[in-house]
Length: 150
Image 1 (cartoon, rainbow, N blue to C red):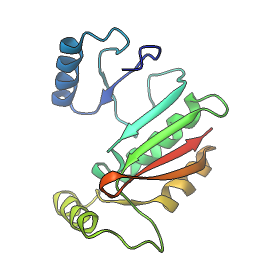
Image 2: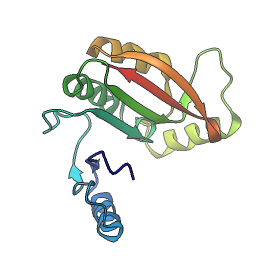
Image 3: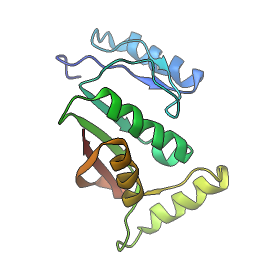
Image 4: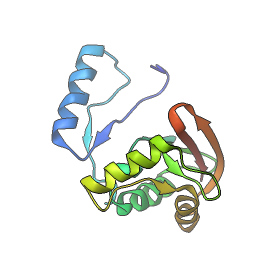
């Protein structure tokens, strides 16, 4: 998996960390570091990164985690580096797919602080942190890739 890159997986859940570390041990990938316990909303114990990749987090966490992701990525990334965020999102003036609407309702039933975020809201918060939305790419299963740059 991209052997020229060093990956630092993270999760706020110790059970998920154990799963990541088990996968890491089984895969024998020397460029994947041991998983780090990380609360996205807090200050990250990382000094720098060449890119930040966040997959399927913003909808299953409080808004504060998305704000922390953006703030920390802006602090870590050099000029023009990428913050890549992937998952299901709402877009103003774009009808929400029935499957995403049902998923959003299910998430909000589980936790009132969860749910699909609006791309515009994330972009506005990113701008406050010094990041700009470079592109939005439609992906399979009604997901989007959001590419931000420092």
